[in-house]
Image (cartoon, rainbow, N blue to C red; front, side, top):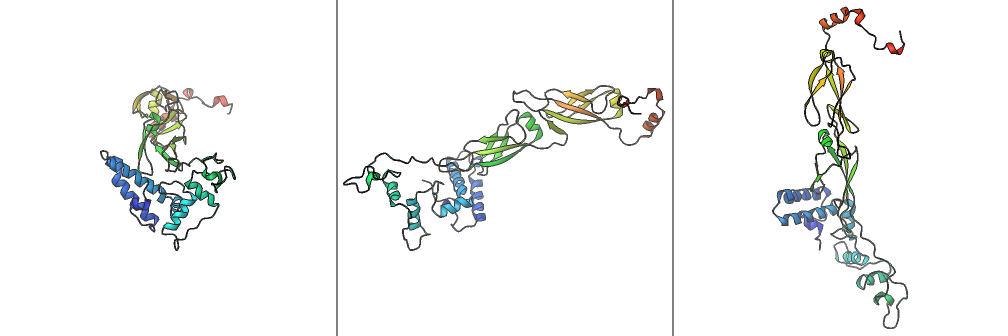
Length: 320
């Protein structure tokens, strides 16, 4: 049976939210499984502390527990249990027993459960009718609700996202999980982790993890491809060159053809993001000619370049 959450965290009922949070963090740090790998008792205690904080760390659940509406395990209490706690607990005035509703609901808690059909099975020697005779019940048992779904945001380094490297996620309970990234995932896609949400009467809820790729200083994502703008000197573009360029898998050598122009795309196959079928997209390298600071020699060359060798790249536009 679950213990009183105030006792588990070692705090008084009138403690503030900050005091409760401070007590939980202290215990969670001491009992965390990563620090107590060979101590099963610490692991059980860690679970108990996490379950207690799931109630006291939630203002709504804490208020319900203080009113006796839920128990230390987070399960809803019956009207009889609530009335009994109000009678015997510190919140009752004068120890009076207060209950509103049909008294038969209280007897049903002791003698077999739900309400029966009125008059069914009643007879001599059974003044309460079918409620005590074990006949067919009319109300089916309601499923116990699961705990609340908890949402998390996972920010993934650009290179790790492209290579689908597993990521670590720390839940608010202190538990750490390794998240396997799905092939072909898109920005903002959510993963559902069953049973990793808040605890509840019918079991723990789920966790929803939203996947986001961190911006990169050099790369941008274009679907399954990675785009890189590569600055080139004028001589490298005119004469061609071999240049070391970065990729998500590390630097590689790239051959730039002679006579390249700005905007030309070169392709590095298999250096992009992983698709759903397991294959990877490409890295597209866009050449950007950079003439740099004003250079007197380059200026003289441009001024004296033979007019017959010049061409108008906009000639096809039909503008004079």
